[in-house]
Image 1 (cartoon, rainbow, N blue to C red):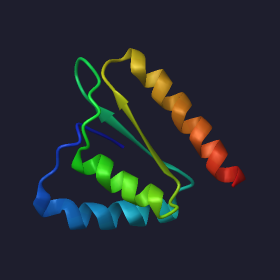
Image 2: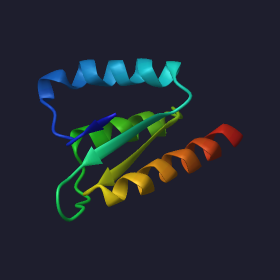
Image 3: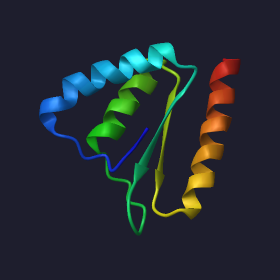
Image 4: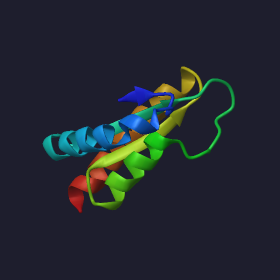
Length: 88
């Protein structure tokens, strides 16, 4: 899943429920947050939702990309994290 991380507060409960359902059905759920220019590390609502899922033990991860060069790094991050979660 990819997004800029900005969501309406009104859809948070529905988004959280849908992400929980997806995480329960998938081997791994990767979230890419797109941010143009310099990578900022501010907590967005979507990163918060993904963090809550990860804390609950769901097989999820996130990565921030600021340009096309970061995409391969994000994919590698997801494969490594999925592999680590599978061996736990």
